[in-house]
Structures are given as structure tokens and as C-alpha cells.
Image (tube, rainbow, N blue to C red):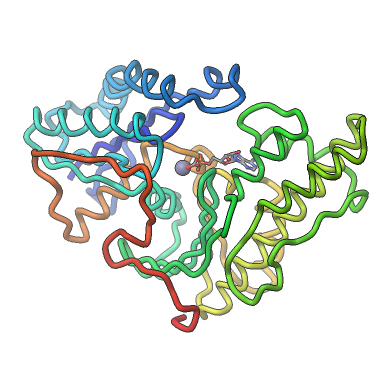
Length: 350
Ligand code: KG4
Ligand code: ZN
């Protein structure tokens, strides 16, 4: 079975072709990032995002088909991101996917964007095996999940306010860094000195697996205001202290979720999973706890079409029937816990 994946939920247009033959293989993928376009505005401009997706759909589709050496007629299903994300951007991808599927007379598979992130480490050469714990840290979400299989997700904890990526982005803005803030802040933090500045570790000892990151951004704001003018090194110290705080909380809670589950595998997915310091500290502490940590390839940490093609293919393999023609809708706000079989844990479950 050959599945086309289309991602257009935010500021990347992603296409991929995934084949389930021979245990599953990614045949081709292509990505267009809108980051340079939005940079001038300091953040994503939704209407510009929608229009830019439209411009790149056909060229990217042609590219993945050509790169795979196959033809459009070989496609058996079209998976696309149904939500969550920007309504206009989602609609562009959904309308294109539904129209293409109708023309090819194949079913569509509307995919939850976070399910794509969650399953993306399965694209690696050494993938995790179900069940595992997943730390999902993207621009809009910070969640800990118990993943028993495709579509079987239990939410163990999540952020009560800002997502980790959002906290990186907002703090970067406070420090005068560009968009997207995460990588820029991480680069500045690399020059910062240890223990010159210290910020609180929000909810580190809250006894549950939830997070809260908005106070951290306020702590940075207060520090910046108090300091008045900051030289480059002082800004780097603040960036480092912010990153250290967020990383310590993420690592501690993720490993607590793993130890509470009795499992030995942790998957880290979403854009913040690209953060080197997070990876370094997680690897060090997980090794001590004899926990194996799995990350997607760096190019599949942030948004991409490959994870959507994979999630669609796995859904079909797990028995989903796919959607044939008719009306379609996007879901800009869509908790992963509302997808089939997934639910929120009462913390005693695992
Ligand atoms: O998963 P993603 O590409 O998009 C969403 O689904 O939201 O995540 C984007 C987020 C942004 O907030 C970005 O600043 C953050 O991931 N990010 C990082 C790094 N690379 C991307 N945060 C910290 N360190 C990084 N290296
Ligand atoms: Zn994402």
C-alpha cells in the first residue's frame, strides 16, 4: 500500500510517500518552510501561510512522485493533517487532499497532527516498539502520553498554560531574538554561563505529570526589566538559565512518567525535541535509569509530511477504513484525547 501524506497545519508545507511493503519504508519526502517569509513579521501570519501553502502543493506533489520513481496512479490513499492548527492552512491541505483522492478514486485518512509527531520516531532506523511513553513538545503542546499502540493513547499530563515551544518563542521575543524563537534562544544559551542566573522550576515537585511554563516567561521578563540594559553575555546567561529550567522540568517529569509506567522506552517528539540540551540531559539521566530514549531524525522533529503519511498508513494497517469522498471538515482545535480510543489517565492507571 502506497500512502501520500500532506502536512499544512502551520508554516511548513510537507509531502511524503510511504510504502507499507517490506515492513514499511519512506520512499520520498519534500518540505517547503515558510519561516523566511514570516520572519519579517516576527511570527506566523495565518493568511499568508494559507496562500503560501496553495503555491507549493502541486510542485511538492510532483517532486515526491518523481523522487519515488512511481506515478500518481500508484497511490492507494491520501493522508492529510485535519487538525489541530491554523484553520485556513488546514483547509488548503484538506481540500487539496480530498480533491486529489477523489480524482484518483482512493480513500483519504484525516490525521491528527500530534499523532504524526507521536509516531514519527517509528521512521527511524532503530524505532521503539509499543508500548512506550511519549513526551510531545511542540509549539502548541506539551504532553506526556502512554502509547500502547496506534490510536491507543492515554494522556498522563500536559501543560496548564504555555507549551514548551511557546515558552521558548515568547522568551526569545523578550530577549530580542527573531522567529522561530526556539532555535535562536538555544543558540544564545550555548554562550551563557552556568548558574549566573537561576529561574524557578515550575511544578517540578507538583506530584503529578502536568507542566506550567507561563510563569517562567514572566520571570525572564522581570529579570530583563530589572537589569535595564543587558550586554550580549548577560542575555546569553538569561537564555541559558531559562533553557536549564525548562529542560530540567521536562526531563524530570518525562522520566517520572516512564518509571511510573514500568516501561523502559521514552519517545521524544515535536519541535522542542530538536533542542540539543534537552537531548543531552535526557540521554544522561535516562542512561542511569536504564531507559532507552528515541528521537525522530532531526528533519522529522519539526513539521513534515513523512509523519502524516506514516500515521495514515499505520491507521489503515490497524483497520481504519479511510474516508471516501463527500464532505470534509478541518479541526483547528482538536485534543488528541478525542481521537479514537485515547483518553486522559486518572494517574492511577499506569
Ligand atoms: O512541532 P513543531 O515544528 O510545530 C508545532 O506543531 O507546533 O514545533 C515548533 C516549536 C516552536 O515553538 C520552536 O520554537 C520549537 O518547536 N523549537 C525549538 C527548537 N527547534 C524548534 N525549541 C527549542 N530548541 C530548539 N532547538
Ligand atoms: Zn507540529
